[in-house]
Image (cartoon, rainbow, N blue to C red; front, top):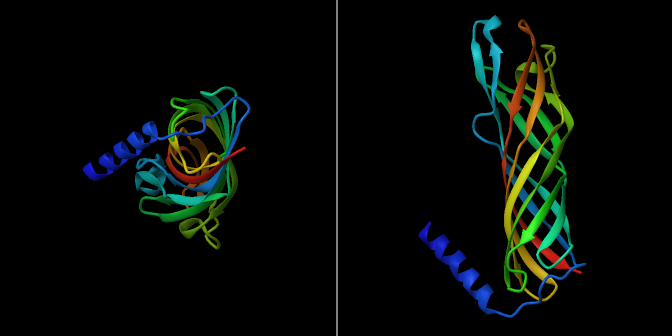
Length: 218
């Protein structure tokens, strides 16, 4: 941990000292790379009291996919970013039942950003915005899979999103980007369990998203 902190501090110091081409009003920043969606550890419960099991914990696993975003700079410090991605896929587990389904989703997010040091090589920023999580597919697996006859239905979600990140200049146009996001994702879920019935619950995914990208300014 000390080594990581020292490396980040050295990177920031180099960025403050080195010359750089600043962000300007009207610039477009395009980034492409990969992001890992890491849901929080406690994702909710499914009440299986009717089956004699009581409330059972729900777990959603993590996944990595290609992400890309575009930021338009309204001034040297203020920009608006749109995040897009290829679909993320997550397995869903229920305590005692095991794997019950897989969902695919897209996480388009719009954020208002403030860039603190637009004139340096190391250019940190913070953002706040709105996420729409669109559930593309939900597939029954394991205990819910045919021929047992169970079903899984997951709704879309709106929620707030916050981010911290930085761009590190390579040239006047090219830069590396690292970002960290928290997204509020709470989805209504209907599960039909054979021998138990149809159950409704809320799954709280609320992931931290880690991203690394290569960027180009034009």
